[in-house]
Figure (spheres, rainbow, N blue to C red):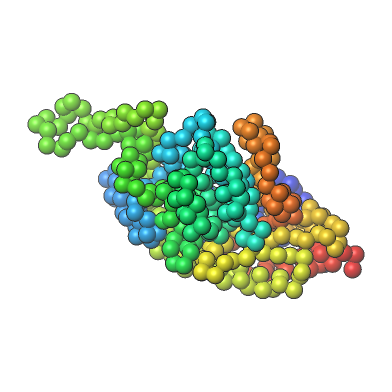
Length: 414
Ligand SMILES: Cc1ncc(COP(=O)(O)O)c(C=O)c1O
């Protein structure tokens, strides 16, 4: 194999984006925009009367509701804000507990941590690598108020079991769907099972509304009635049939709830117009990612040291990432040794994502230090993500496969 060793080590803080010296980089974006998508944005710049909270937002929300089957949908500036709104509406605080998966991006948990509630970490299922429903149930106490579940990497969590547990213990369920728009279980889309669903349209996601964007889906009418005010500073109009439209003033703060403060989590009209356009091709693009993933999995199937998450029957896993586990027992070498080979010898920029949250000082000081997730602890130290984007060429896939084979043979000394 030719030596493609890297020459420069600078990159963006997210770990994504081009870095000089790599033959296969880890791109910051899943795909480029089509002309129709670009036109949707330009059209708002030319024609929209308002640039925020207008007809494009209402249309995007209606489109998203129809797409997910959720009862209500509210466009927001990012998924962290959607999670924050969910946490506010769960009315939790000090003394309450939220069960969250230990394996996820930190933004899943931070909005719940800021309420003062205790975060209790649930382990991963050894087969599917998303949250383990048995561990969730083991960790329920009388203080538990919320189950936060994450459809991580595009793989749906077991929502039938989670909703059953929630009903049994009278808990609220928040689905973090940031990485999984379009993922489904037996045809039912994620974000339509729990009390809240939180979607991200961040720059690295399967769909992105110009780098930032999000959607909150809501089940109950009572929560839905509260959401617009919580999203936008508690503002609503005074009645339209006033004699003088400016008396007493143009708008009103219609929010006076104990210990609940509104925010501004609004999203612009151009992003919403783009969102509606992107939804049209979401299923098609997810199909491409799924077909690509199946092809790569099949090509890697002959390497016993590499394994993938098991996809349960009826689950639509939308492959936001392509993650593998390396069994190091035969070679005696670690995942880090394999990644050293990929980066130094093959010029492939694989990355490792989502440090188990209970290992961060930020969460340890909130009482996570004594909590155990043994499956995740063991699995995570040997897992990694390959470079991944929609439309990866066949010869790139072949190169990834050949390089992994060469790397593992080298580690085994063959
Ligand atoms: C699992 C998960 N949850 C939440 C978020 C937060 O999304 P946003 O960047 O839109 O706030 C992300 C984004 O990377 C994520 O991957």
